Length: 347
Image (cartoon, rainbow, N blue to C red; front, side, top):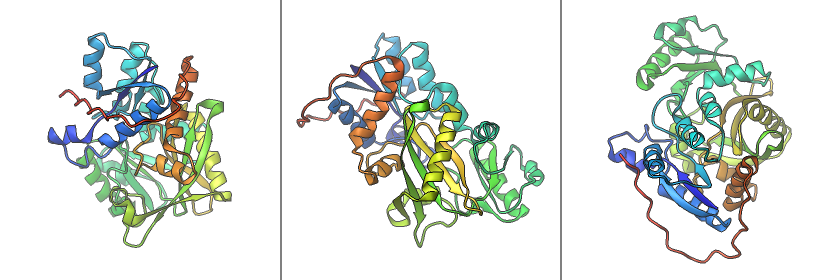
């Protein structure tokens, strides 16, 4: 089986003049290499493709794959994570993870929460601020938490995101609207424990891989798993695999949310406890980070005793099963082989 790999490399966009924060969601060569080596061990032949522009070029040349392992985040717009899956869908090429509709819906946190609320999945009360003057009309009990409506990797999240007064909320919303040029999600701040739940599979076959608690150490930005805390996770964050009643409740609501949104193959759901200790869904991550060293889902799997190759294998098997494809037999050994240089994305 020939599997293409689509991705956005940070270094390509940094060279084009984008800032480190703008490319925070993008990947490094280590991630693509890790995925490629895992797929090779599973018996697949791999072809690193690159970003959506490179995918367009190669499709136009007539190149095809049995499946594409997609981790491309896209650069702009609410549909940026859907660009590669939509293009592959047009060419009838199966790919891993959720379909274009689900990826767009989950990227927009406000729309996600509308669906979760309609499906009766516990999630904090919220409002979406589209203009600075909208902040004064937010009718929710303080404290509140504000963040860009459609960013990942905690972009736009800092200690200032926790707002205790209408004046603080108005100031933070104005700053976020100006900086990110998109609406701001405002929701009730949940003061309890914070978890991320790893999920593998689709629909009724989806299952929890484990529940990891995110604990902020002394010296971390308080109140949230912010971008600064993620960038300095080794000093500021402790990750702990947990298996208690709170973890079980979190896994339960995470699976409810995963199935309600129609997510596929693998990802994460972030959960936090409210002031009564009830688990509520914060957001879904249907296109999870997969860096073998520092991404949350591989860290969770490592703590749970699941090797990285088994995580990638579970994702690919789920995608192959729902696409009617048969995977080859895994290779019996993993001899050393030279790592091919990654093809640079077309500019």
